[in-house]
Image (cartoon, rainbow, N blue to C red):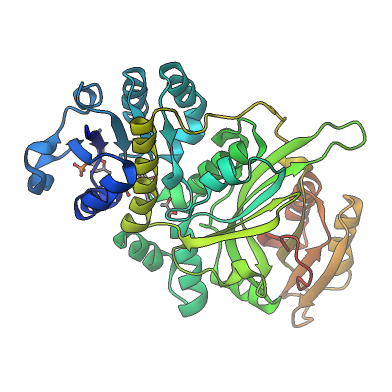
Length: 439
Ligand code: NDP
Ligand code: HSE
């Protein structure tokens, strides 16, 4: 059988593992794909670091992706450029593409999909979301006969590793981030992880697939974990909750003349300690998918790291190679629904608001009065302090579900009151459809 020749762009944490597995499993992969899958070349930035790959190494990525003897391009460089230009060149030259690059897909996925369609080739990207977990193929294929209503979970390994370490062993944020980077979980610029952008890119990809609608990174409300403190983690624990960075993609049915819409958001939130997501620790990811007929499905596994991610890349590579051998293509982009994306201000969640206030008579009622004034209903309010008129007290308010815009307006007003010395934190409380959230 004529071999399927693969050009690899990048050979770092993920790429090195792809090369290892391609070599170690060459015979089995050939049997599964229907033809040998061979490396034609590997493009990197600093060739001296890759001398073990001999003549395969090149710094001419553009030349590699258009070479006549290349059938498939695997991109594991990351970032927007030069990855975008290289992949568009590859697709235009008739090469199928496998990529792990969520940042690029969330920014310009439709352009890549259109280029793949124009050339009649494949674009696969299972590794872009949740590492080793087969999640995109179930959304694109297994669940394509159902109506997905929600996709929600933990999709960033680095931040989950950090939050787990802070909660379990009291690690500092900085130490935990350093360890996640050493283990190969973090992005080249780890601010993409800790500021939530990586999870937001993944949420855009998930929402696009689940709701047959183009959702890009700019459509996703995004907050990271930098502001989460040991005090917040203790406050969550006191409520029977843990803090996780969540990605939540939802479909909202048409109601009262407002058309059906979708939303996607990423933020740290308190979830009940009894919820299955609460026990997802370290670099593991877990995602719940809810669909009308299927009900609730949970996907769980290693969400980051070289070998787990390479597993997903190899799965795509074999699928693309099979398509080349047998003829035909995998699924194309499906964006026919074109549903509007709902503004964040209209979404409804519960909140945990922690304030430092003057410790004197009437303060609690002034604070709760502002919540009432903005139509935000309080589920519980607690004040701790010494009762000394010159002192400070801590007030914690937990609300019922309220619109984001109303809560934001309440907090703005509270921050300006004389009796409020500071707003410690505002955290969402998500029960993710489960009963029994504390507070
Ligand atoms: P690394 O930073 O470890 O590796 C990047 C590779 O790209 C390096 O080999 C680097 O070359 C090469 N490279 C960088 N710029 C260029 C360029 N201009 N031309 C050619 N080669 C270049 O990244 P990862 O392996 O961690 O991640 C790769 C992709 O996989 C990213 O899109 C990431 O988001 C995604 N991903 C990563 C996961 C992980 O756990 N690490 C999990 C899931 C997805 P050199 O070695 O010479 O510096
Ligand atoms: N930096 C990413 C994470 C890699 O920590 O989840 C996996 O996409």
